Image (cartoon, rainbow, N blue to C red; front, side, top):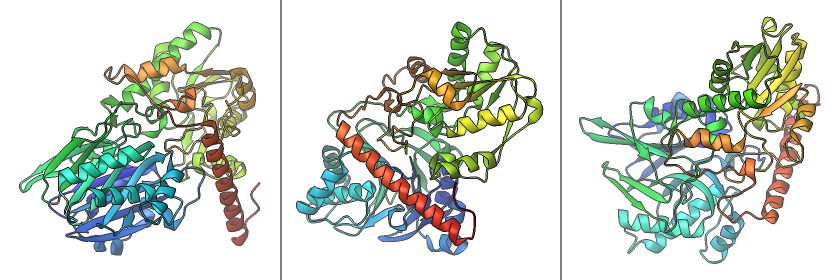
Length: 507
């Protein structure tokens, strides 16, 4: 999962791109980058860390130009941050191109081999985004006549990308001297929207992973980029679009609505906030049907993304809603931290319980999902330490039993607490008195009901069904082996860092 942006404006875009990246910070805290286009010249700055830490005033001043793209990175396959893999990526042949990518290609190794042996192009990192950039560069070279580009030629190149690339990808790219290109994979897995703002000089355009990046900067949402579609905005602000794939279907990632996206975003015509309210209603219905025997005194959310579901569940069950945990917003996500020891420590630093809301009560904790179970286990223990009589746990998502290969850094199957376990076994592992999971059919209906035109969703982490049809057991084994290697490297780096700082060894 990453955040991507592209802007073509009538004035300088450096501040617009920076402000929009801040809005999309939740989509990646590993690294950030901005590239602006001043005529046919690119200006780039990128680095590791949060947006506010990567860019200084001197960096912003150097990012001149009226068009540009930006990226905030959330690594996949357990990889630690590497300066070489921060985005956007750049290639200078046959045209100067910069590219930012959200998603994950499932045929990266085959593409690398083809690029080296057939296309005579060199890929310098392990990033599939650099592979995607080189495939686009090659297809532009093949489509162009006398090295001249026009919208039709650019769209022909995107058609070539669709023919060669498999997996999930939402892309923004700048072609030096020409303009902004954005496109989405034929399955529409990862989100991509565009909007425009009217000025005295004409329209300005923005492309982004989520609509919230448009709203906060005064752009009006026009629509989502369709699966397989490409849009191109030239440097003068002229807009072009074309369907570039032969076979398309819309299958948005359902985990975006459960956890990844901001609640104030609209993705494929679906309000994220509204879907989370519906999830709370479905959980309440399930509790009324199957768990009426639970004597629940209070409903408490695990901040922040579970709040809408918890509030709606509380309302439907007519049980008091309380805030029982206070979140420290200056601690990184536990989801991406290497090593169980570090993760356990960070949960206690990230959340603190309000004892009076737990003491002597039967508490229903509501979270958006349970992935490893490490956070859930610590939270249940905190509730007990705060005096809760009984602790029940409800997940707004079904059991996460399978890896995600489309751009979310899901753990290996051996790390997923629900993999190979029954709900009762997961409850024992987490330490709660009762565990209530959302049903997958109910979750899909919760999201689909907001926009019935969307008929299918990518839900592989719950169902094990991979929508692109090319994910084999051998591929999954390879991804998990790569992830294990990456996690070992990250853990070793964390230990070395702590030892260098004279801190205690990681547990």
